[in-house]
Length: 190
Image 1 (spheres, rainbow, N blue to C red):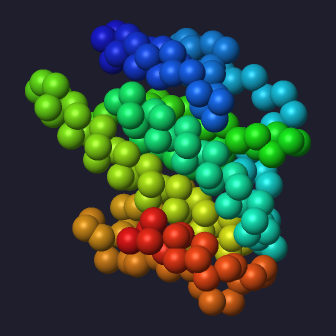
Image 2 (cartoon, rainbow, N blue to C red):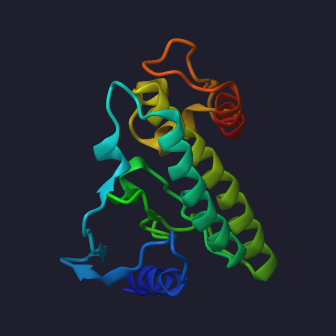
């Protein structure tokens, strides 16, 4: 129907963005009335596959996050946001190259009533993308999901202004976290 056509149009629009840290889908389609986007995996693994209870070394995660943030910033400047950033939507290959998968596939939520509404929606989604990246960083460094909830979107729903839970990196973590990186993660989750 129309919703499927809209979804595929958004997926193809996002796929046209050309940036070294944005994954390009090899196929966008529909199977049994369910939309999908397929990506070539190569030697890459998702961040979720790399995360462990021991946490990721701070220097490694910081290098990954810089690349993901560069890709997201490029997309935001083009008027596209991710809208559902999760550890399984980020990949890293053997050489440390990061790609953001699933750009703008989660949907906009609500109707757009013109260009200004669309700009506002992308700006708000970009802010949520930064929050989500902070929550992913939290999980990678702490070795556990914030608020013991693996789904980043559900964590966001528990935080203000909707919920009442605040997320801060714990002081006892498996690996040391430099204070500047700790401040960045906590600022991203404010």
